[in-house]
Image 1 (cartoon, helix red, strand yellow):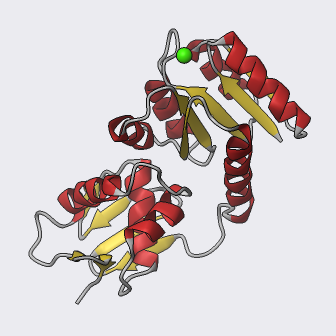
Image 2: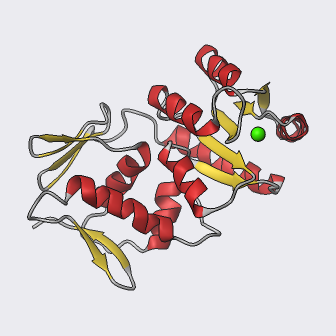
Length: 227
Ligand code: CA
């Protein structure tokens, strides 16, 4: 397994590199966002670990660019900042997971294992290409989402959230389950960010229509249902 580390702090980059290589991973390091982007384009990495505050291209923009080209390449963001807003921004850019510095190496390694395992079990082409629910249609290959004739533009996380809700339609989904299944993580800062994402999704798929698909079950979670 090949991991690219994009981190401008030499000491942290070396620590990561040494730790990962001790666990049997191959690693490469880029000390700025520009070089990181170049390396991702040139080599087939299995996972990327990147800092948010980076010279030349910051981590949020870089993550968005990489995910636009390689949507399935897992990205873990590292940062000294730890507020919910920063997490949201990172996830909005398409990051798969998030660790706040100083982090525990075993924790990082556990998250890497989860993401790499997901990569091999969710191989493209498995299962149906199009999910349908009511007037909604999600093409999992082209990533095109439509409600009726209207195409809806979703971020990678919104896409994943909607996919999970449709696959589990008719069942109440607790926030903790959504955090675990859609974000592959449990959150130390609570699950308020899920309400934020549910609202993003509602604005895009429900707001302009009479029939609503996403419903809140107070004290329990959310449910996706069609008539
Ligand atoms: Ca930095």
